[in-house]
Picture 1: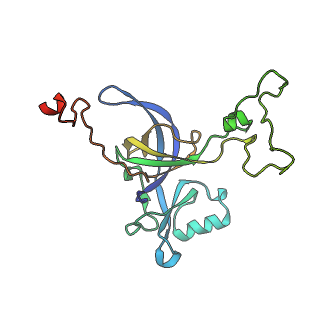
Picture 2: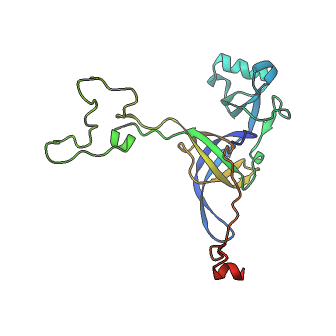
Picture 3: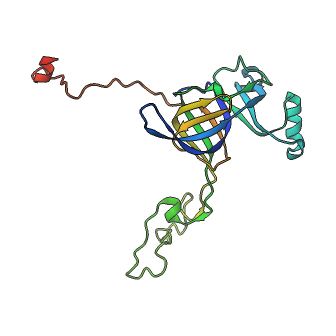
Length: 236
C-alpha cells in the first residue's frame, strides 16, 4: 500500500465534461482544492506519530467555539471552518502557517477522495440494502416491500446485531479510490477528477495520493503466439 505523501482539503463544485485531444468526452468532478493552511504539526517525539493538521474555508470568529478559536490563534492563522489531520509520510518541509494549494497535485496522478455521502432520508430495506420484494400474491397482502421474517424461530427469539432493516440512508463517510486527475488550475485552485465523488455540491472532501499500487501492464499482442508450433510464433 502506498504511504500518504500529500493531501489537501477541498469543496465539491459539481460535475461537467472535458474533451481530450482525441475528442472523447471525459466526465469529471470539479473540486475547489484549497488553499489550506497548516494549523498544527505533530511529531513522533512529542505526539507519537507524524501528522499535520490542515485548515480550510476561512470564516468569521463568531462561528467558532472558544476552544477552536484559541487553537487557531495559538497557531497564528485565521479562523477556519474545517480542520482535518493527515498522517503524511514526511512532514519535514512543512511548518505551521504554510499554505497548500491545488498545484500540490499534477495532471495524471491518482488520488483517493473522501467525503460525506448525500443524505436520502429514511429508506426501506429494498432501497437501503438491495433486498428482494416479497410475492404480490399467495397471502403476502399489502406488505410486499416489507422486510419479511426477522428471526429464525422461538430459539434464539431475538434479532442478532447487524440485521438489515429500514433506517437512515446516506450521510456517512465514503472513500472512492484511484481516481485520475484530468486537469489542475492553480490560479483558480480547481482540480478536475475523472468520475464521481461522494457528497452533494458544496460538500467538503479530502484528497490524498492513492493508496493503490498501480502497476504498469505491458500489452502483449494477441495475434502473436508463444507456441513455437504455431505459424505466428515462427514468423515473429
